[in-house]
Image (cartoon, rainbow, N blue to C red; front, top):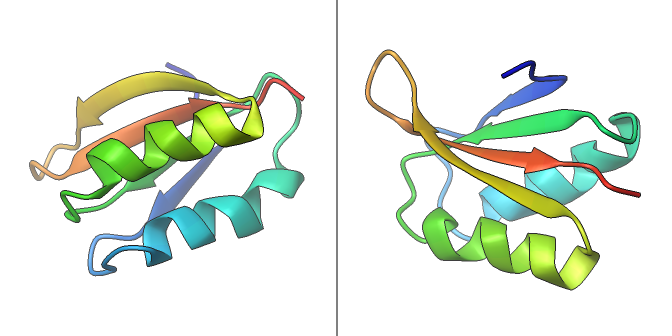
Length: 77
């Protein structure tokens, strides 16, 4: 998948990964994808919930080469 922006939030705990996503999101073009890389297990719930609240698309979760979850969000508006 073509990622417009990757946020390295590996060492951040809830709610910081979602806060970083919200801060960076305005700089991503509509149709662009943001990847949030974080070890925080709460992100599995928090990132999709943020997408629902903001009307954006949660594309899913991948794993980075070093085994860290990578949450993908597509900007719809």
